[in-house]
Amino acid sequence: MLSTGARNSRFARRLFSGLPRRYDRLAEWLSLGQNGRWRRAMVDHVVPGQPRRILDVATGPAGVALQLAERTGAQVVGIDLTEAMLRQGKANVARAGADTHVQVVLGRGEQLPFADATFDALTFTYLLRYVEDPAATLRELARVVRPGGTVANLEFLVPSSRFWRFWWWGYTRLVLPVGGALTGGREWFTVGRFLGPNISAHYRRFPLSWTVQAWRDAGIDDVGVRTMSLGGGLVMWGSRAGA
Image (cartoon, rainbow, N blue to C red; front, side, top):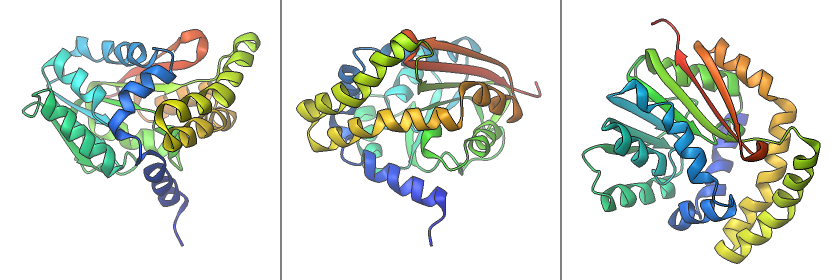
């Protein structure tokens, strides 16, 4: 019998395997143009540290990895568990002429195939909702970052304001599935229908206050939090302890 973690990994691979070709374009459209802004805000916290080697976890089609390489000049490794996403990521890297700076590999954020303190910085996007044990995953992510290195994250969030939460609920439950179907077909309808309930369920179980403490417990200091787009997006960052 598969463990919960294995089932979560298999589910995530199934969910995203049909999305790679138009992932970035549709993600931008369905987020009302906010996805790119959120990514830049996350990368902004990595750039000042002048890292030479960065790991981007849940890299998908390598959009964040490419931005990291462009803005820092670092060697970037992108890791993802969905083979179709990685194939698109490799194509995107080749198209950008970034083969010498960006490498994409198959793997899981819960069990990274790297030694301790391998990277100067680490980013991860939309990851913790798909793992069995977010706290253990955060410890694993922190493990591969050198002391003093930056960890930064982008994730969806549920607005804290009752007014904006009402409109967010309507958008994620109604507009997102229909918009996904019209622009991306059956696969995007499935993802659109899944996202809203999944985000809500995650924060009922792991509220933002819990997440901040989990970062600290994983050995990440100076944890910062920025809510984006009226509370629909979340950027977090911190420094690996022990510097």
